[in-house]
Length: 91
Image (cartoon, rainbow, N blue to C red; front, side, top):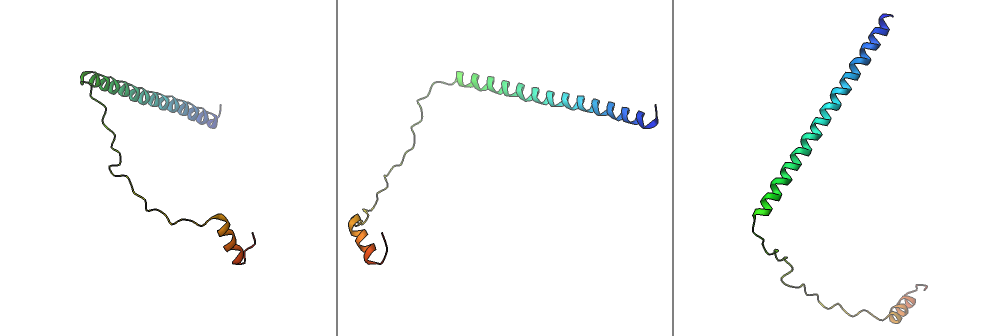
């Protein structure tokens, strides 16, 4: 075996070990996150179970309805078409 082959095999072994340790770190971080989420969910459910039932909060709606000003009456379609034709438009 030559020196280059030994270097390649050593690099490959190091890369494999790094990959295994990185995978283990990711799995540990994921497990820690899931454990924390489960703990927080259990705390929230326990807190909600201890609280007395409340009536649902009333939704805040608009207190004053917006009033629209009555729009000017639009001309009838036939009147509009006539004005367009008299203005030189082809319809």
